[in-house]
Length: 247
Image (cartoon, rainbow, N blue to C red; front, side, top):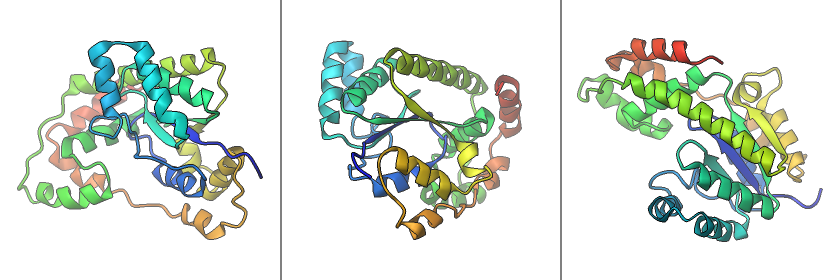
């Protein structure tokens, strides 16, 4: 198999698929950089800040284009930055011959539950949960109530950003592979089958990586349920999500 391509994964926060993204990074001949590099306090956040100051689209596209000349693998959250940043990234990736993934989650309710639990506890991964949960569970740390209007706004903002993304890809005549979290991780086929298929699409032969592929089928245990009772208005948040999430 020849002519592999770097990948651009376009997604929303807490969509999942970290293990799959990590696997693709391991097998790719292209370097994978920090996850979601345009997010606040990440390696390319300064590009976003500069654009917010000068509102110069031409300069933004030049800066992003220069970043992608190395053809690194990127995972990008579309709802965190101005849409002009995402558009500049898409245009630069197209120019460099990237393979595009759009990663979504069928259940917005489950995704936003995860997002607000993480933002409330500041535990964005298993290591952070192990560090922060004990103080919450012991009562040493009291969590603030969740802003329910922020929950509503987040859902509709995310839907708007996803719609804009699909329009950008359509108007730029870009082909992309749409991935759905539930189909990969909760479908009839094991994750390894999906991973091998995706690797083939981006031009990488993984026929001799049986052990690495099988490792993807190991499911991690979710521990966030332990924290639900310690959020003052958790049930109210879930009621709001059930009301607004129409998917």
